[in-house]
Length: 503
Image: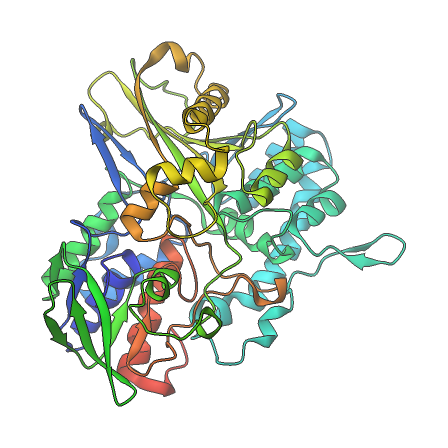
């Protein structure tokens, strides 16, 4: 197995339970892929996902790989309220967790009568899109013929002189929600997964539906604690990890994978090769040989975004009534979208501020806060630390820090007095993502529509014996979706071509 990301580990433990001998080669010195932690002076910060949606995926993993359930391995806490939103006009709304009626009431109270009803009607249409796409896009292997996924399953309302339905998420917000604050609420869900609302298909409506239906969860000790628990489950099932060891090539004989070659020149034989490494990195570095990029399998090539995360160590205790998650919306949503499209940093991004009430992440009497923004990942996958800044800030060496300053200033709407409390900060960019995962980009979950441009690579690769797991493979990025990819790969290996999906 290549790579020790969450999807790969999800497959590793399941395959070990099925009787396979599994060895995982990981080029970095740790496991977890993008689920990392930054630690300094007693503070700890999640630098990947900060919350978990669809926890049933990982409950299924722990049940299927052992007798201990998820809640026995980690302390899972439902986040309530689910989020607080601060809009450009200063209006704020606090949304309860997994309560459609509660969300409707909160929106009516904060934004005016009728706002909640419009949001509720939108969620009804989003549910239809979810019902139409859930099984084929989450629970079944991606078929060789994917043309049916090019059609958008969201039943958009028709409007305008030509009675044309909305084609993008931004159009859905304008036409169906008819309030710039509700539109910003909708668009923030797409941004959180790295999608530009101006180009994301209307089917991205399933993202807020998924969150508000199944809830938002936090793992005590940070989301890295989930990666620790998955790694421990792999070890308990006999999976061997070889860290700090890069796979340079998948060995192919008679048209089928027979093992891997390592950076030191040694080889390891295998009946099957599962790779959790980013699909674009596999072809870029020719771990899998191809004559030209035209022959590469599809892998969400339309996703060109990454993340800047600012870790803030704050003096003084967290306010007792602080929301775990606050979204501070950009005052210029159109400008933010235009900057993403042009590959540059915007003047003031939408930021997600996470303030976990978790004593394991901070020294006594202090607070650890993360602030995240979606940004262009650069012009390609070969990003080094300075080159990312050059690509997105026209070579201004102060550009990244200046952008972090703007993110920190925006976060003060969620953390009053933040800058006076600041002890120190750490800024992480897509260049850090590149060093840790092999690509500066962060993949999103699979979405139907957009002509199929947001479908990840199928779990079965074009090379017999090679399988793809993790965020760049079906059903896409995010903790839950990566876990699903591990289950799908296991089914394909254990049951073969007859496998029709998870139950």
